[in-house]
Image: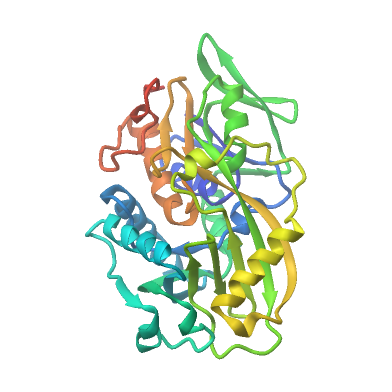
Length: 383
C-alpha cells in the first residue's frame, strides 16, 4: 500500500511516523519548504493543555502526552517546560467570559480556579503582573510547552525515515490525480506518484483539497506574532497569560524573551475566519503592534520598555465546532487532517486515527466527533 502525505509539519510527520510502523505500507512525505516544520508548526507556541470542552478533545490530548513521554524517554532532544496558564480579565464583561469558559470545560480536564484580581498574587508568584488592573482570572496550574517545535517534527520524521519512509523536502504538490471520482495519487514537481493521499498541509489544506474536488469545512484565522526583549531581566520565566478582552496571549521563553500571539477575539472563531491564500505577503500592521504592546503593558508593566526583536504572521485553522476534521472524505483515496488550532496537542492522535483507517479500515469510533461526515452535506467514503 502506497500512501502520500502532504505537509511536513507536526501533523504530517506524525501521520508518516504512525503509518511507517505498519507492515506493507510505503510512505512518502512531501514538504514544499527546504526544511521540515518551517511554516505553521515553526511559528507555533508548542503548548500542551489538559483541558477541553468535550471528552474527544481530552482523549486525543492524552494520547499525545503519552507518546511525547515515550519520545523524551528515548534520549530525545525534546525539552518540555511546565508552566501555569492564566486567563485574565480587566473588565466585568471579561469576567463573564472567563466564567463561561470555565463552565464549558469538560469535567475530565485538569483543575482550574477562578481567582479575584486582588487575590492573584496569593496563588501565583509573578510580580511582573499588575494585580490591580485585573478584574478576575482563571488559573490553571499544570500547562506547559516544548522549547522547540522543530524538535517535535524531527522526533516524528526521523523515526519515520528509520522505519523506511521517504521524506522529500523542497517538493511541492502541484496536482492531485483523480480518476472516475477516486484519488489515485499526486503530482510533485512534475512527477506523478501513485497512492492514497493524506492532506496535512495546514493553511494550504483548502487548496490541496480543491485539487481533489473536496470542499473543506475549514477556514483560517490570521495570527500576529511578536517576540519581545525586556529592557531588564525578568524575575522568572513568565507563565502563559491570555487577555480575554483583546485576544492577546503572551508567555516567557527560557532565554528571557517573551512571545506574544494576537488574534481578534470572537464568539464564533469559524464565522470570523475566512479561506485565505497563505502565500500572499502579510505583515503585522504598525497599529496592531502598538495595540498589542499597550495591552501587554497594562498587564505586565515591566514590559513597557521591551524591544520588538521579531514580527511575523501565521495562520491557524478553524472548524465549525472547534474539533479537528480527520480521516476519510467523500472522495475515495483522499484523507484530511485539518485542525482547530493546537496541532502539537492533536498531532499524535491524528496520526493514529489516519493509520487505523487506512491500514485497518477502522472508523476509529474511539475518537468520535472528528469525521467530516458530522457536517451537513458530507459523508465518509472509505478507500
